[in-house]
Image 1: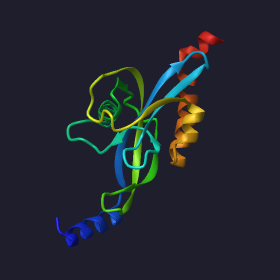
Image 2 (image 1 turned 90 degrees about the vertical axis):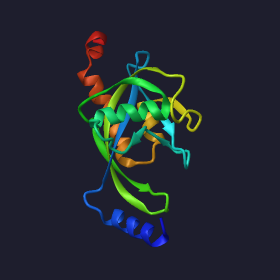
Image 3 (image 1 turned 45 degrees about the horizontal axis):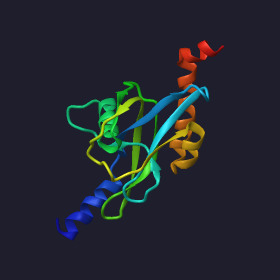
Image 4 (image 1 turned 180 degrees about the vertical axis):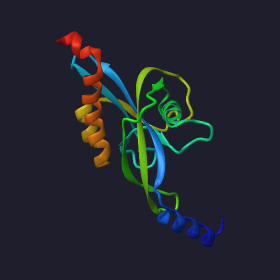
Length: 166
C-alpha cells in the first residue's frame, strides 16, 4: 500500500460515522471470600497497559461469540459469554499508522470456567485477577472503569449468592 493510499484510508477512518465497533469480554469469577467477583485483566501487546480482551466483528459470529473468541485467543479463557451486553465504553484506537480513531466497545460478561494451555497469543500478554475496585483503578478508559464497578453490582443483584448470604 503506497503512502497516499494509506493516508486516504486513515482519513476515511477518522471521519467515518458511526464510530468503529469492537466486542469485548469482561472475564470474571466469583470470590466468595470477598462476597464479590474478581475481574481478569490482560496487558495490551503494544503499551503493556491493563485492558480486557476485545476485537473486531467476525463474519458469521454474534457479538457475544466474538467476545468469547477474543478471550480464548488473547488469554486462553474458557467460558460462555452473556448474550446481553453489560454495557459499552469509548476509547481512541491507535492504528498501525499512528492515527487514532474513536472506537466503541460493546462488552459482554464471561464467567471463566477454565483455561486452555495453548492459544493464539500465548506469551504475548500478562494476565492477572483483581477485585473489581482494583481492576477499575488499573484500566485507563473512564467508561471501562465505570462499567467494571457497575458490573459487579449488577451481578450481585441478580445472583442467588446474595440470597444465600442473607
